[in-house]
Length: 334
Image 1 (cartoon, rainbow, N blue to C red):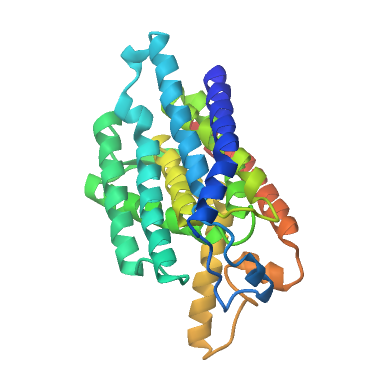
Image 2 (image 1 turned 135 degrees about the vertical axis):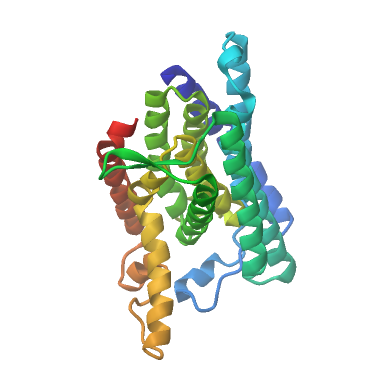
């Protein structure tokens, strides 16, 4: 399993790193530049027209890594115990969300503004993808709707329809939360690296080959992407990349049958989302007052004088600590 993880990580890293500059150059040639919101931090305006949709590079790297990993496993005669739908299930969902993000990015570029699909269009597409993924897991893995509760240290069984509704809410919520986190150079990618490493460890512990391969490829692809995305960024992942990442993180949690683990390992994603909800709610209730200087919360820290690199470092450190705590909390279920 460890060998598989290292191979998947290395392939994704190498492929993403090699195709990085060609993709950036192509995006520049096609004039796929980021449009910056006027209500955002004024110093972000210098990011205007930096190529977006750069998520393509790690999506391609991860996909190639998964295909090669499956081929290696099949060559080693492990294919009798290796279900192709289950092995690729998380990749399928992440890829589908990446496609939704690509449509959204394309709409923004075509309109030449920071608004693509309508919220309702995006939400409906996200719900459909989540429903298909959870159904696929049930068919391929035999999931029955059990939810492991760390505080109680036992699994509570739910009616499948109830569980499906819960799962859709969690998956769509996670996808949008990661999307909100992608607001400054390198943040979403950096925060997701320790989450990916966490799921590599869980996959090894559970002997879940598909999770190990995908999570390791995710880490490799993101580390290579950070070569181009770390501050000052040469490219942004766009909704193509951030929605892919959201689907990947949520998919890994459900593939491990540990959806509640998203609360600790995805604490930064949760805080980013809560900051927006609280900001909007308080603004309406107080008739124009704000809780934060700006939301999502990474912009609040920017307005407080924190540099982008400092925010990325602190948020990634917090995520790393929470991943360790999650391992302790959920160890009984592994």
